[in-house]
Amino acid sequence: GLAVAALSRVISLTVGLVSGYMGGMTDRVLMSINDTFIIIPLFPILVLFYFVMRDSMSWAMLAVIMAALGWAYDARLIRSVAMSLRTREFTSQCIFSGMSPGQIMTREHLPYVLPIVFSTTLNNMNWSIGMEVTLSVLGFTDINTPTIGVMIYWANQHTALVAGIWWWIFFPVLLVVTTFIGLFLLAVSMNE
Image (cartoon, rainbow, N blue to C red; front, side, top):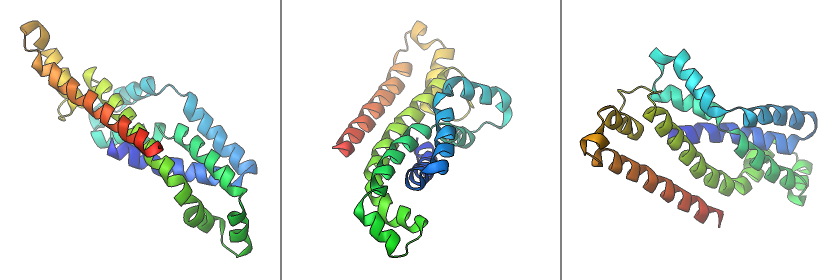
């Protein structure tokens, strides 16, 4: 969750800030790419990546792939804030004082965007953990790497519920649900 959130934040911040600040043709091109990533069905693509890269699929590779696919919604949100910041007086003052667009985006606009970035980071962590658990339970990840989803996968493979060993599945599911609720409540508190 942390790896996916960190990598996708870099992509979404770059695309959102550049698109929102530059506008014009740059905005149209970046938002066309962004919209393409929004409409891609992520779960089938991740399953396809597993089948193509079955032997070399590690959790790090899965995190990179998920980050490359999971940045688009947040980039659009960051873009909307950057567009409003572009029209404010302090941005005009920065331009007149000779700051470059890169300096304006990193020094002046980034602090206004960071609360949104923190909130979307927590939501992105929830999404990535849920996606990893789903893929692992179905056996579409490296089943030798210990994760919560792999624990549920092996419990299911050994028919834990049929054998009456319900706690093999109950406690990993409880941990996932608790993590989701905790991250969601943190995201809500960050929004406020």
